[in-house]
Each structure stands twice: as structure tokens, then as C-alpha cells.
Image 1: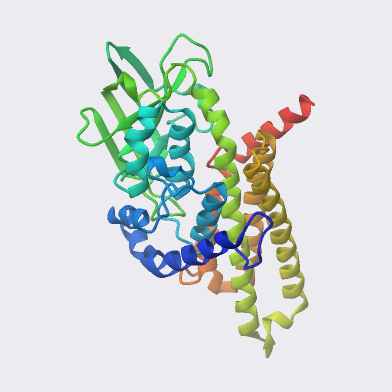
Image 2: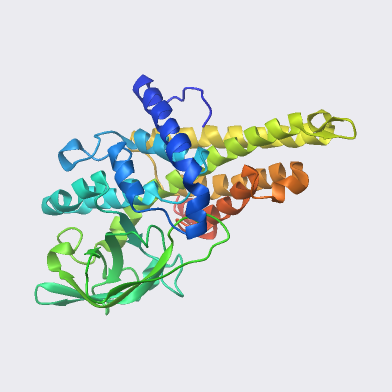
Length: 386
């Protein structure tokens, strides 16, 4: 994130940004290499995040949160992305799952789970994707069959962010298997500790974000109380997802533009120091024109994202605009990073240079949160309905 003051940022947010930046740079960034080697963070990291006040920042204080706004989540997301700390997902935990509970859960559910999430006692994940379904949420096969006062859950989930450490999983499941498509889908909260029938698969090998504990989850006759249904009515899962997904997609764009800005800054510093044929790489016209293009793209992305943040804070962010931000900014991020890596030459291919990590970490932005092809379809539907 550049150090300019954005339209949505006030003095308190500036102070919060500076403090948050120091935490990510000093406490977490130095540990990324070790986390990558073990494919996951240490569990106590979540307790540290709670102590620093970085969990559930926009959840009301009555539920253990910091009582902030979406702008606080944006600052956290930006500084985490800027520091290239990708081995845990605060977006999933605080900005997504916590808000499903806050906006759609019962009062008892808010009291039961949000304070533990805010302290780091519980790590949260959301289980949408399944083998063979990907972004097609309407095709989920995981079922939650009611049996008296319990749901019996059967199925499997894959690509689950925070999956290894997750103590609380929001599971997308069919509670009515006879209902077609999105109908009959519900969100069921699962507390995983010592839960019979629940197991985690291996940590998945990825080309980027390799310290992120992405895992498979399996549910074999897992029983949870009926009171764990998110909200008080079955079959509301798909509308709940559709309401919250724009927030998730905007945060993906927020992270992408922060990395894009970091990529440009890293590359400017590199070409100013690197000499080729007796002169600075920065003095060559191709370098200057390429960086001019990259800077322009990053600036345009920042202006677009800032506008979307303002809309979100005013409650005006719609599905199509969030989809536009998600697909265009993540695509542009990959383009800019690729150009910046090229200017590093062979060193850009070496993992000791941040640009190499950015290159592999950024690619998934075009996939998760709904693939960019799905995002374009959402935008197209809004045009067709106009």
C-alpha cells in the first residue's frame, strides 16, 4: 500500500495501518521461510494475532471483536499482502467466516463462536469446494441429513484454506437432496475438536502460497447439533453465500493491488541498482517504458479498488462491481508481476528475490473466490438484466 492517504482512510486508520505494518514486517514476515518448509504456520500464530487485535477487527465489541469497520479489514489485508505474508488467511477467518456468523447466525451462535475467533482460541475456515465441483457451488454433494436433534454430515471438501488448523468450519452442504441446484443448500458450522468421523487429509502441495495450510477435509457420519445450522432455517445457504461473496472478492482485489504496488517498487529499486552494458538498467528505454506501463496499471487498479472500498463502506457494493474488481485486478496483478520479473532477468527466477514469490503466490488470485471466468459471467448477467 502506498503511503498516501486514501479517501476512505482517516487519521485513526493511518495510525492503525502503521502499527499493523510493523507487526507483519517484524513479527511474521521473517517466519515465512520456515512456514513454507513445513507447509503451515505454527498454531500459536493465531493466538498472537488475537493479542495484536488483528482478528475480527470489524466485529462488534460485544462479541469480542475490535468494533471497527470494513476499512480495518482492508488495512489488515493490504499490509499482510504488502509484507508477502501468505501463510495464513485472515480474510477467511475474520472478514468472511466471522461475518457469516454475525450477519446470518443466531444470537446464541454469535456469542458461542465470535469471541473465541477474536482471541485466536478458534481458527475458522469455510468449506465450499469439492473434488469435481470447483467454483460450481450449486453442484455440492456433501449432505447434512437431519436425524432427531442432530445433522449427520457426509462428504469431502478440498482446497480448504486454514484447513489444517481449523477448529470451526462453515460447511456448505445439502440439507434437502431432492431440491434442484442451489435450493436445499445450507451452511452448517462444525467444531472439529475430538469430533468422531471428521478427519483432515494431507496438506496440499501448491506452486505458490506454500506455507498456507490448505487441506482436504472429510466428513464420515459426522454428527453436530441441529443448533449448528447457520441461522434458523434450512435451505438459505446459497443466498447467504451470494450476499457475503462480494466482500470476499473485493478483499482478493485489495490484496492483489497491494502486491502489484510492491512489485513495481521492488523492480524500480532493482533496475536503479543493476548495471548492464556499463549503465543502469533503469536508463534503458525498454525498462522505463515497461515500468511506466506497470505503474499506470497499478495506479488504475488502486483507484478502482479504492472506489469499491468506498462503495462497500457505504453499503453500495454490488455483485457485478465486486466481480469486475476481482477478475480485472487479479489478472492485472499477474501481468504486472510478470513484466517486473522479466526486468529482473535470471535473478527474477530465484526465490531469494521477492518478485519470484510474488509470481507464484499471485496466480491463485485468478482462481479462488470464484474463478475469473465465473466473475465475467456475473458481469455479463448484469448487462443482460439491464
